Image 1 (cartoon, helix red, strand yellow):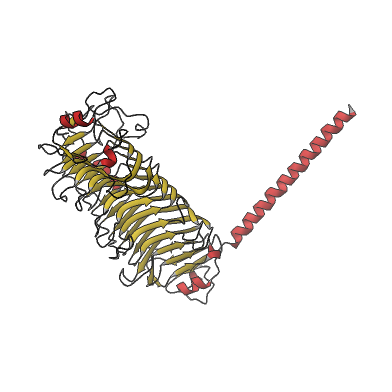
Image 2 (cartoon, rainbow, N blue to C red):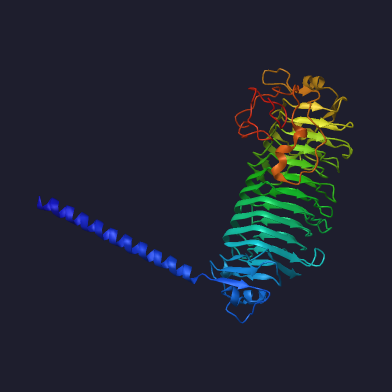
Length: 545
């Protein structure tokens, strides 16, 4: 019995000891937190300030960016520039100055006029939040820098936290925002860019890249407007982009508007990615993007080495190149999906496709999109184009193309594929609507031309279900205003695109083929309506009834 009491006493003593130790640890941690807060400082900068002051109150504000750069900033420090004033120079944060906040105080935004230099230059560090600011270069042809520039030039730098909100950037020779990690093994994690405008800089709006494929993690870009980035006129590099996110595992680009970029650029795109996995482009409008070369200039692109990614609920129109492109080339493009998007009058130049697949594209699904290709497109353009360009010899496999409206006028081709597609029996076209504005359709099946759906079905076995029964439709889908939609310039208004809703009594209602489980993962149609209202798929981006 005494032994039992001794064991209980020792256990209780040990518990009390652990409890006291836990309390001491908590008190110590709280003290450290209070001490760190006490060490955090807020510095003020005013056009009427004094660089000889301590900067730690509005009445003792500094005057210049030079004084800010001369201060050793610590993690948690905040630098506030008085609003509605302009400050000249480049704000620079060095490797030991991560975790700093930069913004405006008072009325309006402060403007950083950086002349020929970067507006904000953050080297080898991150954890930086910048918001409510303007950054101005001295013009895209007088400046070779980027407006907001994060760079990890050293090797093996995994940098966490970049937040850019409510800024306006323009007038730079490179990008408005450039986040790059050229150092071997380096990348950025948790990048957020939102509620901002980027315009009138030469090479592009937003550029994010890592040291290698998937080096960056968790990127979010939302509610930004990006326009007028012409490119530098050279053919040795890709310039004139709107939003480019590379080398990233996990990214969303949504509710943004990108337009009028690339007229002097080699192979630019409005919104695109390469070397990435798990990317989503959704609820965006991309239009009037151009190219000076024979490729690209389109709305959206999954380029080389993109996997398991989705384009959905986007509106692409009036672009030189494809509205929606998967361009794997000799690399890899696998597990990707294009669904519930609208394309109006894309492929204006270079005989491209409104939806285009190129190269080593596998395990890819293209379904429930609405394409209208009207007059003014380049000769040879098509609503859907899949090819290997004759350069690589790679064949496509496991393509599932179903329930799309492919609507052309003026004799444009509705479907154009070469041996990259026809050579593999795993590629299936099922439940699509082919319409040529009242004329005979043009289908190019590896050089064989077909002008009727029935003849093509019987000759190729396409547009037949798994029981060898004919599916698909040849005829007017009865859209409410095909070809009549204009520029919205507001991603929040995409559900107002009434022109691409189906009329009552449309023949494509409930005429689509059933979707495998992998296709039914979409939460709604293009307009936010719930799916399978009539128990079967409609054809196109609108699930009407």
